Image (tube, rainbow, N blue to C red; front, side, top):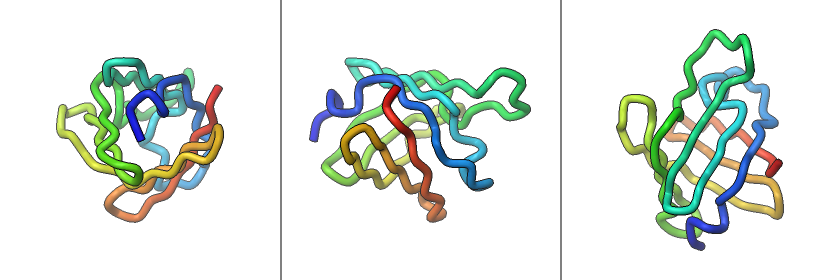
Amino acid sequence: MTDDALVGTWLKESTDPCSSSYPDELELHEGGRALGRMRPGAREHPRWDVGTFEVLDDQRVAISEFDDAVVRYAFTLDGDRLTLTDASGCTFTYRRA
């Protein structure tokens, strides 16, 4: 799978507390650029704000976090649904806008 498969705007569907630090809206752009935003009035800064992403293989993606650390996540893409799992086992979903 290539980066292009994930390019687009994604809206978070998950409401699980473990996913609260992940952005409510995620824009993935050509060239591996990423932009994350929280909903207006949110009290948290998104873990992914302005940074990069790279699809490593069909099951892993690397995304830079607010502190510029690049973190790997397991992912699946099923049509317009993107499901990610972090290292702590938190699984959360986005739907393509």
